[in-house]
Amino acid sequence: MFKDILKEMVDGVEGGLGAVLMEFDGIAVDRHEGKGATFSVETVGMEYSVVLKEILKAAELLKAGKAEDLAIKSENLNAVFRVVNDQYFIVLTLSPTGNVGKGRFLLRLAAPKVRAELG
Figure 1 (cartoon, rainbow, N blue to C red):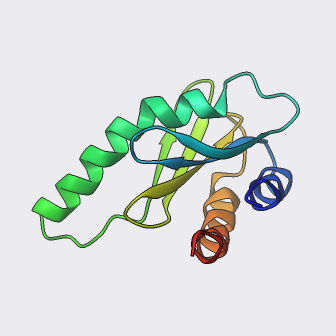
Figure 2 (figure 1 turned 180 degrees about the vertical axis):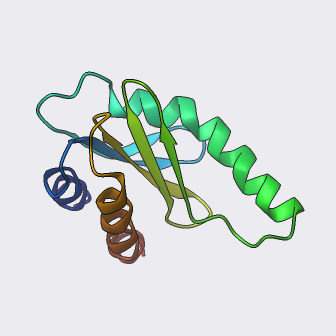
């Protein structure tokens, strides 16, 4: 059910490598890894979930409002995160030359679809 949404994102962006729907406790609900993925998207989500939770807390403490997305650009991988609700988030991984802007856009479109499927 979620795999189609995740696949659409990965296939729809230049440099898309993988996507995962994950609980904030690091448990993957569903994932899709495209061709050329050199990192496990599930591992990326698990490792960065700790950072994402801290950023969400910091935004709350600063009274900045709820954080919605986050992008981390590193030498070998770009990772874009989108909060779905209080329990779930989506991670889209891209190659270093991938189109992060389009990835963020596709995540923004996918989040309501995932929210609707979650009920």
